[in-house]
Figure 1 (cartoon, rainbow, N blue to C red):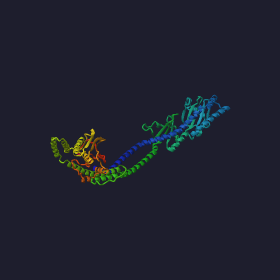
Figure 2: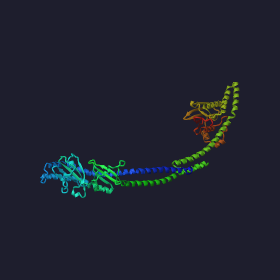
Figure 3: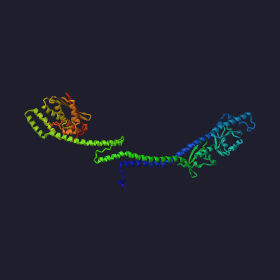
Figure 4: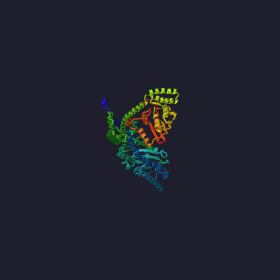
Length: 605
């Protein structure tokens, strides 16, 4: 079952992974979205209701402040208060007032009309003002035929008003409308009263309930929002439905502590908001059916959700197309790899581009080209290595036999007193002893000793003596190097540089930034540019076929030549090794070897 339903291709695995990585977060998001949307919708509905209620609060607050403004104006107007004091000192019978009294009364009435007119302009309805003095004198801005102000003396709340001091006001709340002309249109009125500052009377300001109720009706029609004005005892003062005025509103006390924004009225949930007026403790309450409050917002969320689903489907289709386009080069690369696995090293992917896959295809093709070149290079390297080993074997010429014979000759010559000949034989013996060792590497100072013995032998056969000067740094003296790599260079200097002439060969060795720099310089005849170029070409660009077809003709003791040394060192140390040859005709020749410093030397190289 596992094999049957497993997905083997990278494209299939990538597709399944993307589907899982997209679907699971999408489904989880939708679930969380549906879970959290309810709270978000409710919060948004509450916010909308509070914003609407804030606008209503501004209107109602303005109306109530206008009533207080009238009270404050009358209470603190100096001219009016002087008139009230003058009239309070007279008897209550004002049927035959003097001209001054008549004029003073008219000034008060004009001010009352002015102040109530300003309030009417801002609020839209007239305010009814009554100033009643203790001696029975009164001032009104309305016709007494419409309402007899003396009836105020029978109100139960009058004693509370008389006990007030300063700017304290008593809000009567709702009461049946007493003004005959407005009673039919507004059955209820709202009243606020205050005692005069001189304690010689009281002021009463009354507005019709319709001034607030009509505004509530407009909101109910336009927004379906029920606005209620309550007193501090939660009794309805103003409502769009006049029949509910005076009823108790108990639902503020029945609010759920877990969800205080929602109340249930007649088995229906309502969204409730409340604002309280600091001036009198009255409350402004908003009621909206919950289904209506969240309906519009739910519609918006549903439209957004539908758009998200459609967008997800379109995105998924585009994603599948993109995956096929992006993975097509990988599929091709897989086919090329399969072909290479079967042995076809000539196939190439030909995938190119600026992205990672394009660079991968290019690198893959370059790797195949490099592998092919390496196979050819390894084949040629093995051939060159076998040739170099053969040259070394041919150079040994049975060293065990020669070493034993030379020792015997040296002892006889030394016994006859010919010490110079004995030293020559000793140097040759040392060279032969070195050839019979199996080690591929020796210490640098041993290699220098070999060269010095070699120079002794060669100076005995030279017409004129060549001097060897050595400058070896102490920190490279014990470095391990291949055997007999300096002797062919010294031999070339003797044979081609001096040609039986006297001169000096300088051998230097030192550390140079991770390399052992070995330099062999002579002051011989040097080379012309053409000869130098031919030598460099032979050293650094010698074809393998030429090396195999044209072997070195000089087969002396160690006449292997510079090309052989260069080839052997390059096979030993790799591309990090370098040989530099410089020469100037009549000045001399310099051969410099840069050997990478080895941490551990492999003896079987």
